Image (cartoon, rainbow, N blue to C red):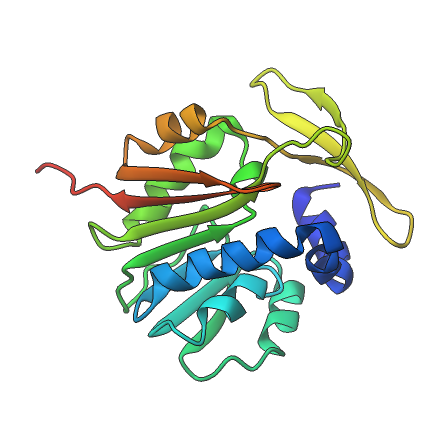
Length: 216
């Protein structure tokens, strides 16, 4: 079973993640963090899922193109009716189309932890190629919390961490779930970004960075 299978099967219950009481304060802080940074911006979002963070950004953004590999999760996102300035597009985060519009923000929420370490450079190079130089990169994800996070089931030869998730129907999936340190985040993004800043909350981290202007 692939990660795509897992998220397709999880689509109907995905938003339950945001209803967990202990996450309430973190999510309020993260929404404020995001809104402050996307006002008036044109956003390209990858791994949009069911559109939770798209909906947070939509009232203040100029325009959003929200992409996800799974059409099923995007169908749920589309039902949020976020306005004509928001469009949803089925697309692989590693093979995004060439867009006619330009973007000054790239958004990837709860996605970085699922990128295999050996593919991080590939993803970042491709993602930033679809953004204007000096665009903002915005990411939110989780860090490991003892007694709260799902246990790590194994590691592979690239030191990717895996965890087992059980859906409401009892189906079990083993998925990649990496928990980078601040230093690891800086190291990963520094080849294509500058002004990298990481803020840690109770269970989440939020990262902002600016796409580096490449020398000719």
